Length: 77
Image 1 (cartoon, rainbow, N blue to C red):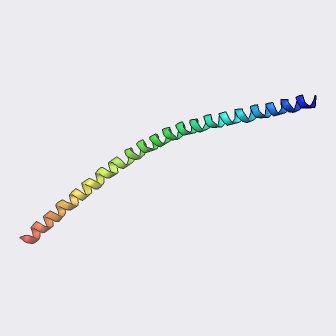
Image 2: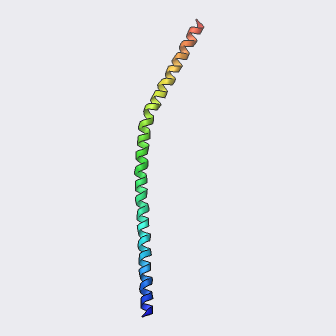
């Protein structure tokens, strides 16, 4: 009788450990999917924010170059 009870407890313990191991792998896979979606959304938002900033910087440098050329032309006259 004691052997049967011990075997039942060991079997129950193995089933519990096995089910926890499987569910943690699924959780990791789901976390991976969530992380991928989050990373993609963050990149899109960052690109949307940085795009106008980059354009403004490019226009600013272009304007500065033109001003430098105009200053050189005025100094040469």
